[in-house]
Length: 314
Ligand SMILES: [Zn+2]
Image (cartoon, rainbow, N blue to C red; front, top):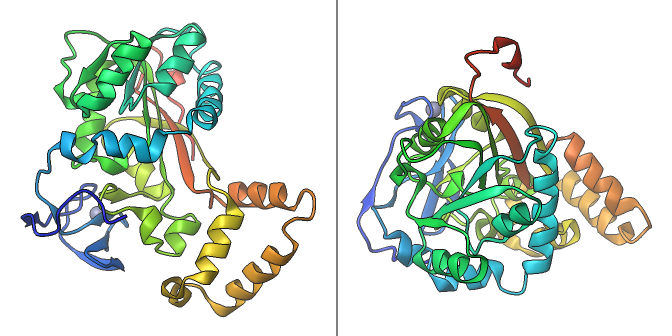
């Protein structure tokens, strides 16, 4: 996959979105794209990047076909777990806004469990699918286009959204404006410290879609900069580990990133991974080491009337 943005379109260079510095070093050379790392705060982003591609061109029907078609069942199961995790944190199933609603599978699952749901998505194609199949209000645009005077939400969710944005801090500020005091933001991003990041795996890093590449620490720092209090964070492994490891070992381009002892361990693991329980054990180990391929983070807008509720995670 080469991505939807023509590489001959005008490019722009941008400074660090977290600390504002222009000091950066190359983190990964990925053909037409370079990911840099801020030497001060560690944030990683695509630099330079195409200027202002239209969202409807980038996130067209082809995008949703590639990432959603034939995957409804597995996505429903995945999002059911995400909805269940919200219940203890916001027990009375109030108003929820899903940012980057896509074809609405998360909205469908949340609505079925009693939540009052709305969505926003920059793709006209995706909004049409949501309205026609779910009857749910999904605004065409970005969260920055919504006016806080229209409505306030108790929960805002952003599943795999922040890495696509051109201004992640602006996106989080908009979420702040739209949440009630003490409201909850739940989000996920690909883990730049996970296996895919360690390997600089171009096809999974997808620099043509993912403009930012967060580690747990840069994600938490960005949330704090936007005025949120991170209250819970963990990583999970979504992709098959066998596929990730075997592909990495087959691809010459990844070999320079993998130290020889790690290659030897990976080969040994592949030869015994069918032993019952070993795969589960590996998933658990990745979670404990915070190396799963997704970071899940829950953060609160500070509650003005109940400061004791403003406890952060580490
Ligand atoms: Zn920085």
